[in-house]
Length: 437
Image (cartoon, rainbow, N blue to C red; front, side, top):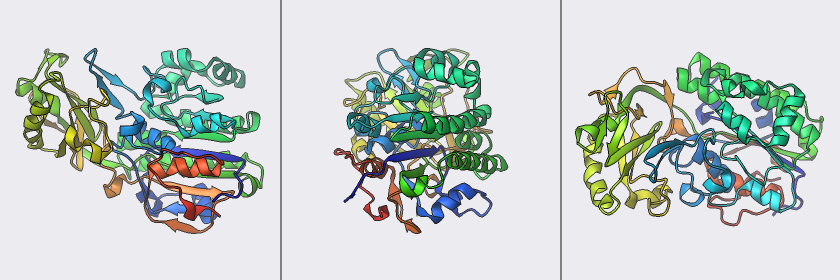
């Protein structure tokens, strides 16, 4: 349908910006409101399950669910070592080792376009990004895995590279977001990419710490809106009219938390897990790995795993704070791979009920604990009204003054690819033809 590709596409992710904030009169977001006046907003965007940062961001750039792209959560259990692995911050895997399908930036690079990403999840080691500052959380990972040319450029620009790990801590991520916005303007000027991915994180961090609709959450949203306004002000006056299509998205919404559920304590009580007095897991036939409002149970006996999973599911479903328990037989409908397809997936997946979150602790006797570690969470099914994500598009090639019904996050990749004159052939999402002018 596209007559001519736009010269540039910018994709901005505001982590954790729930769709409900768009209709909240207390939210002051003049930059986003001005973009909406000249563009398109969806009533909501349904993400993938579990609705955590790594799988949701990968779905937005691949157009497929975790069963196809391979990233099944923020946290997993390595079945070979028996050790939990945190995927956020990319401390372990390069993108080619983690992702099982092509991304939008892979397609763009293969098509001869210049690509760049700043703080975008699951991009470590990508060969398709000409400029890349991945979303790292650990100073050691920053220094050892940021591409040398990017690291040198940051130092030349005067950024405090020695404090990147510190700025990645939850309460300080607003400092990192300011650098992300500044660096995005620099990359547009110096590198002029055809595709730029940008990720802001403090909106998510402050909602975890203080809860959705808290004063701190409103501040973070308004703060990031200001950064987006600064980024837009750095563009030439007619940039959005003539050459750049801008998409602003989020990866999930947010639910309030009052209590947390400790599934590993119940597994210990059932004799399926042993832990020392400090709570360190020593041995486990079954072990739970939390992904905020969702989580996997991993079973070590592979021959009897289906039977044990079926027996264990109703037992765990009795726990206070658990909404649903699914076995691997249910995974295809959830968009998840079975453990035989992808060892990162557990044998059961659990969803926390509204008001609850999951924790990994295995010590003590309390199954439900208050106060929880976090005041806000996500991870639950993407169909929860408060868990709907955000979508806005404006600029070159985008229609004006439209409101879309709810879309899915898998629609993002094929729509952006089309804007660039590319195709995402294996996408599960659809091209949003109605937004194109």
